[in-house]
Image (cartoon, rainbow, N blue to C red; front, side, top):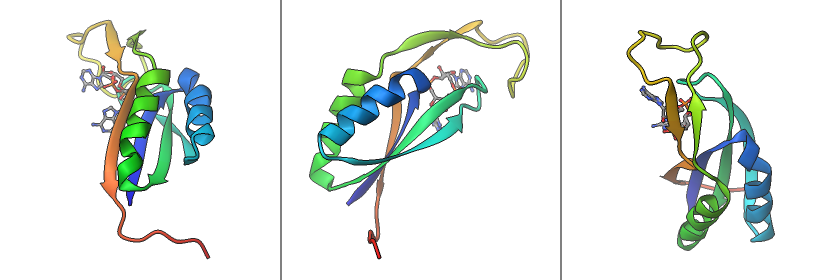
Length: 105
Ligand code: 2BA
C-alpha cells in the first residue's frame, strides 16, 4: 500500500478531489501553506494500492494546471532581491510513500 501526498493549488483542489473520489479513491485534504510564496495551497492525502498510484498521477496531471504566480515582496521567508518576480508553480507536487500498516477500528 502507498500513501500519496499531493500539494495542489487551492483553485484546483475541488475538481481534482471530485475526480479522485469519483474514481473510488479515498481522499483527505489539508489546508497548507507553501514556504516560498507563503500562500495557501492544499495537500491531498490518498491511501491506495500500489497498482493504482499511476491513475492518481494521471488525474493530478489532468486536473491541476501549471500557472505563473507573482512572488510577494513581504511575508515570504526569503527576500534578498535576487529572486525572480514571478515563479512557475507546478500543477501538482507529489510524494509517494510506503505504508507499513493501514487500518480502521
Ligand atoms: P511554495 O513553497 O510556495 O513554492 C511556490 C513556487 O515557488 C514553486 O512551485 C517554485 O516554482 C518556487 N520556489 C519554491 N521554493 C523556491 C526556492 N527556494 N527558490 C526559488 N523558487 C522557489 P512548485 O515547485 O510547483 O511548488 C508548489 C508548492 O508545492 C510549494 O509552494 C510547496 O508548498 C510545495 N512543494 C514543492 N516542492 C516541495 C518539496 N520538495 N517539499 C515540500 N513541499 C514542496
